[in-house]
Length: 304
Image (cartoon, rainbow, N blue to C red; front, side, top):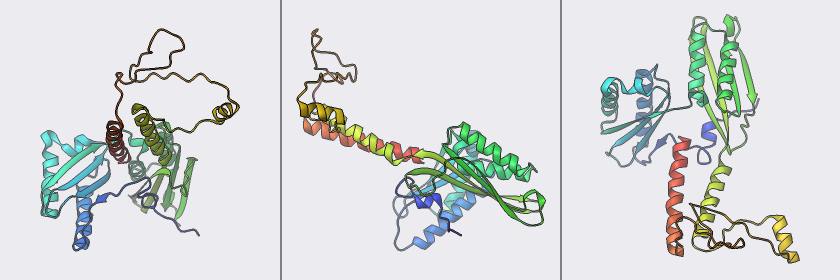
């Protein structure tokens, strides 16, 4: 049989980012163990809070520890007047022996989160719902929310059978070998009266790398246009053929940022874009770097 890799770890650095963001050469073993204890503590304290993932970030040794809790029920995590959040923060400070900054991030599309889907199926199995019905419900909910493909797998003594088996159900595409594919993976365990049943869920949300590349190319082209240079976009085959023959083609008139045509003549081509100010090359480069940094931060937040 072919060996499987974890879809999330397989795409770290390409589509996904690390869930623990820190580096330490000497105390690496202790910090990894500490991360495990923090995640285990939060999972045990928040069993009904629909927690999808927990990100941990350390800046400096002995500095502030940042913990991000991604949940579909932020009210359960925060508690009344923030009492629950304060209790969790104190518990993490006792484990880490350093000040903690706790961030609670709401998940808006819970049906597209693989971990929440797997936990939901496991809860239904514990409540004696038929496993096929629970699997099909989860797949239908994910596809309705915009997923391009879903796969659900259950293994164990399904239906109370004497011998354990594995059954799976899939709709749409789930390209596990495509690195640019944004595939979310989650698993959970249902503890039933006949034994433990494992649940795995894969959710394919579409490709990521191409869209990121196109956005960066668009920013670069807009910066070049603002500085008065060429846009850097490749001409179409038809445009190159007309240029070779010598045909004169009317240039396209683009309006950006409330631009206005210069003059009343129908053949006028000049447009004032973005307020009519022409940037220098240095200003355009600085603006490009600033927008590129904002884009990268936005993409990081979207991936989280």
